[in-house]
Image (cartoon, rainbow, N blue to C red; front, side):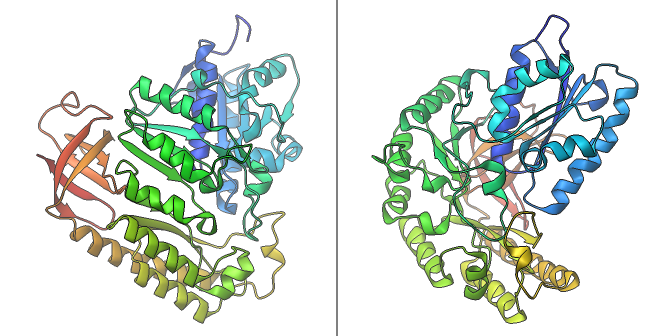
Length: 442
């Protein structure tokens, strides 16, 4: 970038942890060139929207935000707006045609090229950089690790699954695993930087394997967990049918692997799972949960649920509620089915009426709230090592996470100097709510 380069940038991020890490990668590149972040888009010389296209409403929100940011160009000549992330990959040239003031489009596999794209735009070219090149820039030293408690490491990109509802294989590309040596090198880098919690990332994180086939995810978990300084190890998102007994064993072998797992089931009906092309049955999912709870008693499980999938009958939906009652998830991310372009599900017969889907979604939320309230009440009196993650919404409080990933609010009498971000603090749970806990340091 030239000497008269842009000075301030603003990035708005939607979606998963992969998008969060992509944002850190883009911010790091810009900061290395002397640009400073701002929290006010009106002050920015460069606005980047790092988008998610998993659901239709998320995509609509991106275009709405693009429309609102265009007005800043009237008062800031030379200002740029870039569309990044999964919507960028899916839309490509169409995004430039749809939004005339959009300067460039940058797909998730090309975020390492951000500076070159900005320079091309400064030279007068509106750029579309999408696709999945074999050679990709991934400089761990240029990542702006804006969290002071969790270091995220991508271990596998893309997805080769063919779930009929999912657009990820089209927006993130085919599966591509990084080598174990590169992953361990980045983890050591984060430990040297002071992180105590490591989170391994991938669309199908437990499908990771050494590119030459000599190791699988169980081997990687074992290697990372053994590194000095890894106080907490998490990974997301796991695919149920890719779990092996060797992977489950790691929960029993390493206490620093957190007793928490996000394990998307999507539906409690075998008929729906078959139409989704998930590749497992409800009984197989139950068996995996049983093995996990044997390996790590008390493990907290979260999941994704889709209601209103094409062909979902009332009986199918009641099976989903029954699954939730039986598993008793610590948290649930539930969504109404959203048709995505290029996927197979919109072509399936028996599309569910939106009002029926809304009712079913509300029923999931009501049931899960009861389950979470009950599970959290059982934690009152327990002492956890809480990892402080930030200030609470109320003055005099900080927020943290238990090893089982529950949100904890800690009331304080002093400042954050006493409980800095990233510190592990023993705390006893005093009160429980459906979505959080109140605890006091001990």
